[in-house]
Every structure is written in C-alpha cells, then in structure tokens.
Image (cartoon, rainbow, N blue to C red; front, side, top):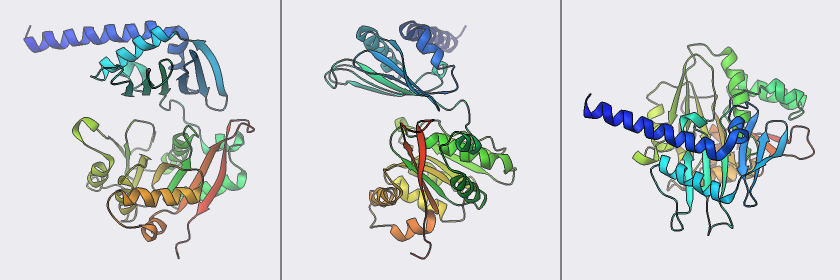
Length: 320
C-alpha cells in the first residue's frame, strides 16, 4: 500500500466520522428534511427552534436544537470548510458535504447573536413547472402566457425579489420550459456560486465559482463565451459581474435567465446599474435596456395559498 493510498483511506475515514457526528447532532427529524423534495430551507433561531420552509406550504416548527449541539455542529462545519469558528471568527458559511446535498450553509455564534444559529438553503430536488405556478395561484393566467411567450421568444429575463422569495425556484420553472423544447443545437451554460439552477436540456454545461482560487462570476462569464453558449443562465447577479453578464447577453446570446435582489422591477434596474458601476464604469442604463428584455418580480405573500406571488412583470422599452 502506497503512502498516497493510505492517506486517502485515512481522509475518507475522517470524513465518514465527521458525517456521522453531523447526523447525530442534527437528529433524525432534521436529517429527514434533506430527503424531502418540497423542503426549501432549514432555519435555527436563537431561541433553539428549528423551522422548515416547504414549497407551497409555508414555514413550520419542526423541533428544537440545544445551543451546545448547535455550537458543536458549527465546529464540524468549520472543520469541513477548512477553517475554525470562534469569538474572533464567529461566522461559518459555504457548501455542506455531498451527503447533505451540498446545501448552502450560513451559521454564526455569539457575540454576533445571543446563541448559535444557522440557515441551510436546500438545492432544488423537485422542479415546479410554470403550470404548477399557475395552478397554485402564484401567477395569473395572463402572467403565465406572458412568461411562456417571453421564454419562447428567447427574451433575456431577470427575476427580482427579496431574500427567500423564490427567485431560483422560478428560474428553474422557466428552465424546465426551455428544456422541454431545447435540442442539441441549443447550448445552455449555467454559472453559479452554489448549485441551485436545474436544467435538463440535452446540451448543458454548469460552472461554479471558486473563492479559493479567485475564480469569480466575471471570470467565468468571460470563459463562457469560449464555450459556444446559446443561452446563458446566471445565479444571483452580484458586484461588477453584472457588466460582464449584460455584455454577454447583448452579443448574440439571447434567452438568458438571472436573479437579483430588489423590491420591485424598477429598483432591480437601478440596482443592476449600480452593480455595473462597481466594475469602474459610468451608468450603463442604455446597455441594460438593450440587453434585458423582461423583469419578473416575485414576493412572499402570507395571504397567498402558496406563500408567494408574482407581483409584477416589466417589459423594457427598447426605444429608451
């Protein structure tokens, strides 16, 4: 047995122990949520209550988790991420192990908050179609037809909304519509920080940023253009990558999808312009109006059956 083989085996055994410890701390109730395709997010508040959000069902109280166990779990997550958690470094974030679906994890300990907390964003396991959105009352029949037509016409679509408003889930619904008709001649490139966008089209390439090697979205967007994309999907638009996205969308790659944090479509356009300026350029409003065709606003709505609602669809005037 070579030293390399021995080292690999030792690392695997260490990883297996870490996963076992994580599962033991979380307990069967929380671990079962990772197997629930309807689950969207697992949230632990500083009162020890574990809340679960499920698509179309809202938020429910699942169980309680003692602060001591939570602290131990954050220590294990920090170990997995190759870092530590302490009073001087009270935040742990990043993708969880494969055994936990590489879910997006964010956690913190005192003094940032009274007791340890965390939030786990689960990747999509079930695709909710635009027809599901229509039947669930998330969008009206008119909105449904508008989105379907925009997808078929290969419009560049920006999905805007607040945190956990369902932006990525809506992108996946539109991606599903695209995948149903896209053949090998339509190449789709997806760029994300963490895997959330699902596309079952037959000619798809997925790219992930890597903070450890300074590979960010701007770098990947430039690389994307060498991958012969027909459509470019981007996870959340952040920082100066907005400028690279607009340039990519505006150079013969129509039919893109992306998400952005904003409270309404007009605010989304303003924020997109502000993000472009982070790349060291002046206002890019003309480029935005040329590259972006549609802004769809989705919001949480406690009065809606599904807890969410499409509140507005803005079609940008190409003559502006």
